[in-house]
Amino acid sequence: MNRQPGQDHPPASDRDPAPGGDGPAAAGPVAVPEMQAEEVRRHWRQGLEIAVLDLREEEPFARQGHPLWSVCLPLGRIETEAWRRLPRQTVPIVLLGRDGRGRDLVPAAADLLRRLGYSDLRRLSGDLEGWQAAGGELFRDVNSASKAFGEWVAERSATPLLAPEQVQQRLAAGERLLLLDVRRRDEHGVMTLPGSRHLPGGELLRWVGTLAPDPETPVLVHCAGRTRGILAAQGLIDAGLPNPVAAVRNGTIGWHLAGLPLERGADRGLPDGLEPDSAALAAARRAAGRLASQLQVPWLDGAGWTAWCRDPRRTTYRFDVRPEAETEPPPPGFARVPAGQLIQELDHHVAVRGARIVLWDGDGVCAPAAAAWLARMGWEVALLTPEQATTAVEGTWPGPPLPATEAAIGARLLQEWLQRENGTTLVLDLGDGAGYGEGHVPGALWLLRRDLEEVLAAHPQARRLVLCCADGQRAEAAIPAVRTVLPAERTLHWLRGGRQGWIRAGGPLETGPCQLASPLEDRYRRPYVGLDHPRQAMEDYLTWEYGLVAQLERDGSHGFRPLP
Picture 1 (cartoon, rainbow, N blue to C red):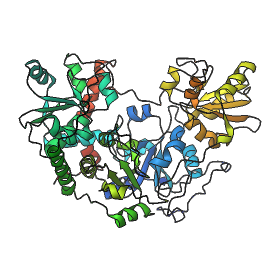
Picture 2 (spheres, rainbow, N blue to C red):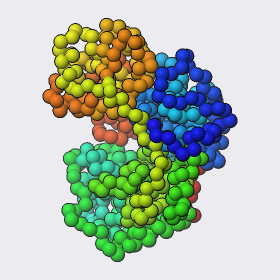
Picture 3 (cartoon, rainbow, N blue to C red):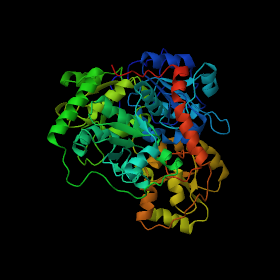
Picture 4 (cartoon, rainbow, N blue to C red):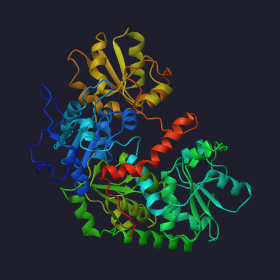
């Protein structure tokens, strides 16, 4: 990992940093000091930087619950995700999590993070049980903080919500209205309300004046459940849109539960060649700027931008929040995440609560509107002009770990090994479980990284190990850590290009969950995606969302702010 400015300074904690580097781990686990739950909550309440990493896989993380501002980062994803989600290596990090058999996941994760250069590591005292005993709430599902924020906004602002039956009656009567699906395009294609047009929530303010120039035209928005629809509707209302605005209550789930048919395979985006009306775009820019100003979101000048990026005591995330359709690459050091998805899935991109966030969009609408939401969520956020954003600030963003290309092999060589050798080559698939089921190298074992040593012990005849994943990145990044637990007599390789490279080379495929060495719990099946979930699961999901505001009040650590 590239070095971060200030990395040689003492860590924020009062203990000495652990040694870093990519060499073999020291014999025996290094003790990880504890941090009490109340100390974590104090950091959250006071806006101090801290990352709480839950090491469980996504399924138990979502179903069993987790602290509000914790993020899911399982052991097998640390090498490929830590560098972008934890860009400052001296940030305080708190680890928690046990697997389904009660095994402690913290020592292995701490060892790996130390070798990647992270120095200020603690473990949550008492794990989840200690958190609850100290009065902390456990929030289920994924993106829980964003969803809880949406419910908090709806209650505070009395966001207008229309029942599906009301909307259907108005559509059947031929009422002239604008019905918009504010999710991602792929979600829109799976299922949507009949006649709904796709327009992501982050672009809504930019386009709605062009699509509904008559202020008498009602604007109705929906998502799959509640959060994105609520924030899309309330965002237009807060921006002062003159049109009547409402969200369809409970989105496609509510529509389905009401017994109304959903449309499949839709592909209605913005009309081809449509350009924003200049007057409407100018009004949208003023409205977005006014919202950001109300929440005291600053525009950074050159000196401020450089100071933020080079401050060794603070973590600064940078996002280009332009639409998915934009083909121009983001400015140097920026990650591309469309505005609506950033708000909805913030925990997938930002692991450090209390960090700074800088946004840029190129036209002054999407970024200020998103910044206003982030400020209301309790984040310190700022904006950049196009001129400032394209000015690179050197040495301020870490990169991924150094590649292990010397261990790479191609698909053809692997196929030769598997054909001519009987059981001495073992392929271990470390990728996503769903992709493994769709097609993988024949005979490959699928496993979670936490189970690696057990799998190695169960296959003593395998003298050559080949790591694989979807595209090769996760397997390549795992090579240094796997070497530390591999007996000297075994050789280690990774498949260049992963499953995708294997397919391109014409390699045969095996489908289905054939050889599972671990339970398939790396991905949580969201009850608002698709219609093959039991009705009770959908109803339970909505009931959970209705209860989030009460959970926030009991927990007391959210830091959300009302619009002044």
